[in-house]
Image (cartoon, rainbow, N blue to C red; front, side, top):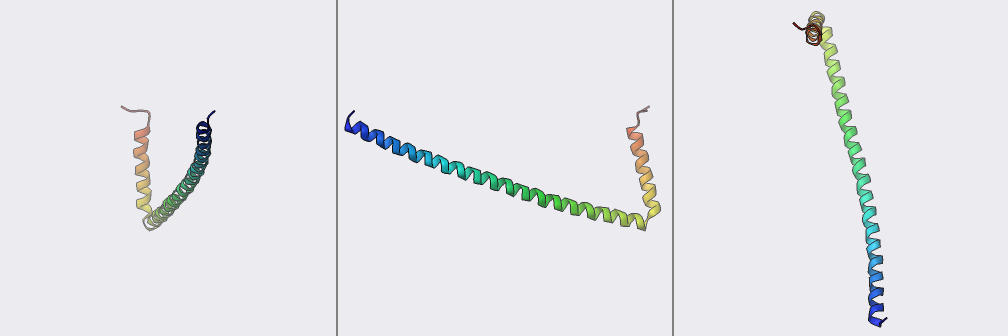
Length: 94
């Protein structure tokens, strides 16, 4: 082989080694981005869950207080709601 061909092959090997190193860096960066993204998504889900849970507790407290203040109205509302649901879900429809 000629000296020019040997030089070209050596240059090609050097470029391939550099390309492999670049791909390794890219893969590491992608792994970091993916793990950071998953961690960030987990934190957002946890924050949303905590907000929903706080709202559920607040609503339950409000309902409990409403039942204590107006027990007869609450009992009649529960009875009426149950009666309507029973009619809607019953198997006997005319």
